[in-house]
Each structure stands twice: as structure tokens, then as C-alpha cells.
Length: 309
Picture 1 (cartoon, helix red, strand yellow):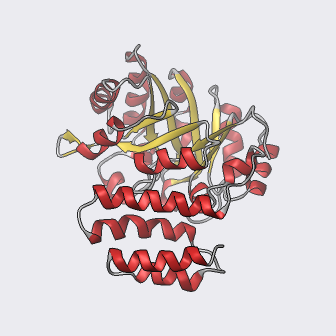
Picture 2 (tube, rainbow, N blue to C red; picture 1 turned 90 degrees about the vertical axis):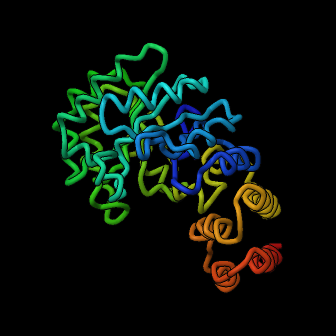
């Protein structure tokens, strides 16, 4: 358990933590100080409509939109659109390591282009109507690349920095580089949030003990696989199995009403089961993952939920 001086943030996960998920998670589980959206970005010269729709439908007061710029001009365009929806806090993604994103000069590959990264950081001070934060990795090619731009990071007017303690080419494999994260923490003048491999209370307690100067932690995959994790960290009563059933059913019903056809629904819902599967329920989850229609999915989920009681 961590005390309330440490913030708990919900990490953005593409295809997972959209508005429907965030709203229901906050209602059924909560205990999160901030929710950061999956990144808003341009595609074929225009900002994606689904990103805007996700922001437009938000009702959470503690939501921070994230943008994915490739340079100062794109930073300005994305900020202008997001700010039109009343958001005063915007997070800049300098951490995405997905190859198609890197191929377009966005995310943490910018650490391979320090001049471009400096350009983005310098442009942050051009807006007086919003406050920026950054989510980043320690680098793209290795975990020491942050050292090349730490002066620009420190000079930028940022509210905080969230650091995933890996470099981009690792994706989510290998160990987090806690030694290099500690060096970054000592060199950085901003408030720092830790992110990376936090899947249990013990993981969080270990990081907080090792780095007592961090402002908080960001939970990603760990919060999806154990949606009680933030509650546990706050010492709040764990939501029971019926809560999970209610959460799942309402989320599924939302997607049934908003997604067109069986395939989009199944792709969206099956993504969650990659996180929710447990050893004890492996056979039941296998049926869910093999479901070829909404009807078969519903039947498999009903079987799974009946085994929870």
C-alpha cells in the first residue's frame, strides 16, 4: 500500500483504454488520480475522427489527452484541436515504440533525432492556454539517449514527466533499466512519474522504496490484468467478482451498440482477455478467445462468470 502523497495514473493503451473503458473503470473501480488517453494523432493530414470522438464523449474531470507530434508545427495543430474541447492539460507522447509510429518520426524514435526533439520541447513554451506534460522512454536505441537532451527537457515548462524505464527497441521485453532511471531522476528538474512492469502491490512498493522522490506511478497492463490494483494500493476494499461481471457486461453492451458487426466487437473484447486470463480459468477463457460470433462469445463468457461465484 502507498500513501496518498503518491499519485496513481492510468496509462494509455491503444485499443483498450478508450472512453467507454475509462468511464466504466472509474465507476466500478476508480482510485486513479489521472487517466491519460491513447494518443491523438494526424493521419493523411487530418486528425483522426475517432480520436476526437473519444475526447468529445468524455465526462471525467481528471482526463489528460495525449498527443503524438512529429515536430513543432504538428504539436501546435494537435494542441489547438484538443484545447477546443476545454482541456487545459495535454500530454506529449515521446515514448511510443510501435514500429509504424517510429517509421513516421513520432514517439520515442525522436531520441534518434535530437534536433527534432529539441524543436518540440522548445515549442512547448509557445502556448499560455495549456500546460504540457511528457510521457517518454529513456531513449530509442539505448537507455542513455535521454542524456543528450536532458538540458532541453529541463528547460521546457512541463508539469511532470512520466518515464517508462526501457528504451524503444526493447518494446516491452527485457528488464527495465532502474539504474539509468535513477540517473534520470537525479538529473531531471521536473516531477517524475515511474512507469514499467508494475503488476502488483509488491512491484509498486519496491519502486517507491527505491525511488522515494518520484511523484507517483503509472499503471498500464498491470491495472488491466488486476483492476483492483489501484484500490489495493490505496487500502480500499477490493471490488468483488460480481463487480467484474457487471463491469464486463456493461462494457460489452456498449461495444455491441457502437461497433458494427461481430468481427469489430470480437476483436475489441478479446483484447481484454489477453490480460484477464488466469491459470484457474484457462479452459473457460480459451472458449472465449475461440468464439466466432457474438452469440458464442456471450455463451462462453456466461460459462466463465458462472465459475467465479
